[in-house]
Image (cartoon, rainbow, N blue to C red; front, side):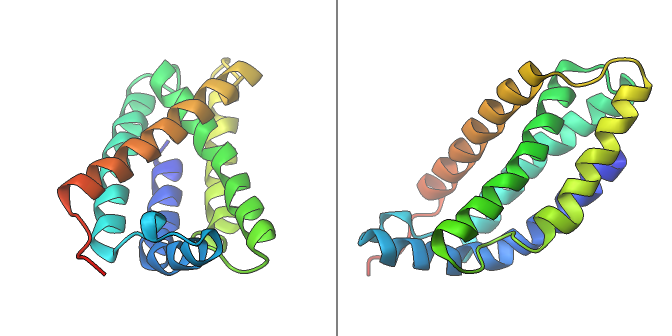
Length: 155
């Protein structure tokens, strides 16, 4: 569980540093500035997500991985790795988080998955589906809060 939290932290440092630049590329491709994220918005959104991930990992530690919340966050973070690869394939370039997603986040998630399996409650496909939906919704919510709290200056 600590491994998952550490992997997430390393991965999201990369994301915090590179998301504003990636959002500019996406904005240019879509022809709208609405998807651009400022450095402050990126940092706040990632910090908010960090609260969720830290809470889930804490529950995972206290329940030896049997917490439903932890299991869904774990499954969602593991599936999240694919979004980085797909985004880079679609944009045919580096996108935020691409380096640490497969090299740090995936091994961290796989280590946590193995620990849960050893405890006798392996993750299921349903965990992955629900976890992916949870983490996608949480990411959107964190970014929405960041946009409302820290509006971008007019262009």
